[in-house]
Amino acid sequence: MKHEFPQDFWWGAATSGPQSEGRFNKKHRSVFDYWYDIEPEAFFDRVGPNVASNFYNSFREDLKMMKSIGFNSFRTSIQWTRLIKDFETAEVEADAVRFYNEMIDECIANGMIPVINLHHFDLPIELYEKYGGWESKHVVELFAKYSRVCFDLFGDRVKHWTTFNEPIVIVQGEYINQFHYPNLIDGKKAVQVSYNLNLASAKSIEQFRLSENSKDGKIGIVLNLTPAYPRSNSKEDLAASDFANKFHNRMFLDPAVLGYFPEGLAEIFIKDGVMWQYTEEELELIKNNTIDFLGVNFYQPLRVKAVEHEFDESKNGWLPDKYYEYYEMPGRRVNPHKNWEIYPEAMYDIAINIRDNYKNIPWYVSENGMGVYGEEKFKDENGMILDDYRIEFVTEHLEFLHKGIQEGSNCFGYHLWTPIDCWSWMNAYRNRYGFISLDLATQIKTIKKSGYWFKAVSENNGF
Ligand code: GAL
Image (cartoon, rainbow, N blue to C red; front, side):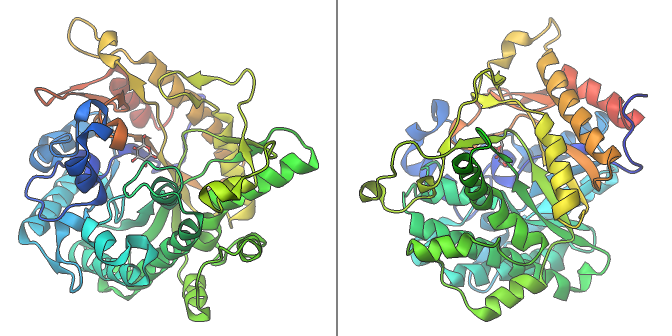
């Protein structure tokens, strides 16, 4: 075999509670539930999270199907808005405890390691309305409380936890680029929220270490690392990529792994009058509560150049765009369905960066994948989607990952986004990502060609 992976390598896929479960029996609303209720037309084809992929009802069948295509591990998330009845006291909902218990047990019964994430863009709307959501340190405390409940309830069986999925996307979506409710443009709040999310992750880790159940468990965070490649090696382009790297990647990666923020970043925020509020005790807490392992989501690189049009602060106030502009590299390969660049080489660069600059911490690819619009047209006569493009995409990324592992990077797994086609926020069911297709009207689930291919990869521990 050409590409053999390390022993006990994780093969599987990831989803999240809000994107797969459906809102069945859920008593509270997340910012996305709420946004859909007040503005359904903001979502592709007006499809919201109400039913999603019905995982709340069909988890047993779904998990069996995942097992049948070779998974030995699976990530999903607990919904704060499902589990908790009272956010202040962290009192729980009995039905949610039943559901998560049964789901976790079923996962283990199928021989899959459950990886449980605590927050996947699904802030309770009440906490936004009452306190300003992640702008508030009280909400940080409530999150720590909620996470402790999760560790105490499920940590006897769940040995791999992650605090947040893609915290920078919360910052971008809610405070910069308007794709998560409340859709603000406010750079100063974005900076405070970035800090608060780091603090929330560290406080959650602190709670984990205090829980009885943490002794043989591990905790991490899932970050979407988008290496910021400069247009050229000019001083200006390099400065632009350095800032972009700090803002998009290192603002979360450095505190999570090393315990402190990247040098120079706070200085820029101070100079520009947007510095976050912090205390020395909080910085100490961040320093003392770093992760055991890292999850890396990778879809596309970030290509940047020096600003060409002077940034106009009178328009929307301070924004990180002051320091770089996006660069569309001529001749780049793209996935036409999302206009995202395909650059599997980045997988290797990420592996080496973690090896050399982040203590070679154990990590895994927690999401990678390809969203495709109109996949039904690739169906064969038995209803199976022939997604050779996905097989090719995953193969290429695995090849570069393998090279990084060969050179000593400590990667222990690969998860596709996603097992079964799921609800993708504003894009709803526009682009499909799964190894298993979903017929939205009938909820019939069918393994795609890539699913059978993946089974063989998993069984051979390589290809
Ligand atoms: C990621 C996110 C997932 C999923 C995916 C595909 O950024 O973690 O929730 O939506 O993108 O678009």
